[in-house]
Amino acid sequence: RYHDGRLSDQQMALLQYQRENLHFLSEEILRLQESLSKYERTDDRSTPQVDLAHLLAARDQELRTISAEMNQVQSELRLARSLIAEKDSEIQRVRMTNNQYVEENERLRAILGEWSTRAAKLERALEAERMSNIELQRKISMHRNQTHVEATDHGA
Image 1 (tube, rainbow, N blue to C red):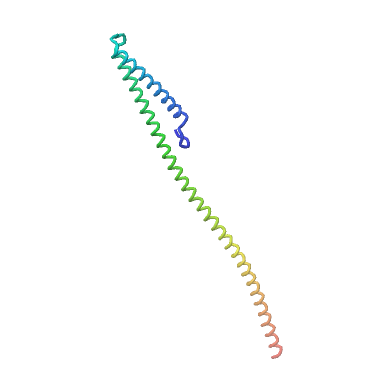
Image 2 (image 1 turned 90 degrees about the vertical axis):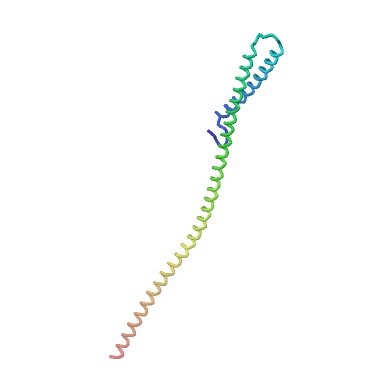
């Protein structure tokens, strides 16, 4: 029924109709009251006072009914605006929380990227160290073999 806190076209048309009807009925009541007072002042009983009084009462009741309907529509409008304001606040809170999560995510991604770079450097350094150790082990082994061969040659 409501769109962005505003009345729907149907409700706007209904309110406009009710305003026009209220205006018309108010004028009608004034006219009938004038007629009634004129007939009360004259002794000419061409229009019975009972009919005028009844007509005036009917118009007055119609006016009250339309006023009540207008009040109801305005009350619904206030309620709808209140609900929309609540939802807007809730959406704003969700957006703020989401923005905080996005910022935290970006920060954590940066940290993760830095750690990944460090891990890659450490892996390369570890691999270089392994290769160096293998080379050193090979040299030690060759040196032992050479020392053993020389010792065997000198001892024999």
